[in-house]
Amino acid sequence: MNKEFRVKIGLFSSLLLCMVGLYEWIADVPVTTNTYIPIIFFVGGTIGAIGNYIELKKLNKTDK
Image 1 (cartoon, rainbow, N blue to C red):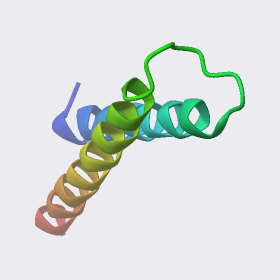
Image 2: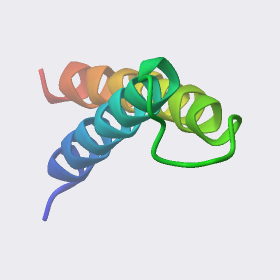
Image 3: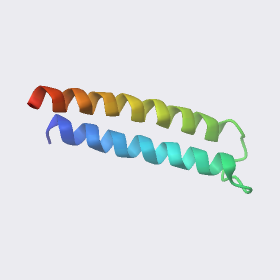
Image 4: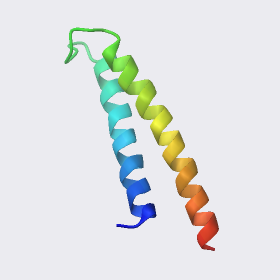
């Protein structure tokens, strides 16, 4: 498994975590009883997605 594939998996999972957090935050019936857990999911997923996107751009730039 090369590094580009791992970064793509990380990007996908971060976006999924961000979407789950956003859904739980906006939904009328939240999955968790704590109100801060979906916010943590959303913020963590967003930060991870941005970081993985930057890393993927760096990998693609060095390949060319």
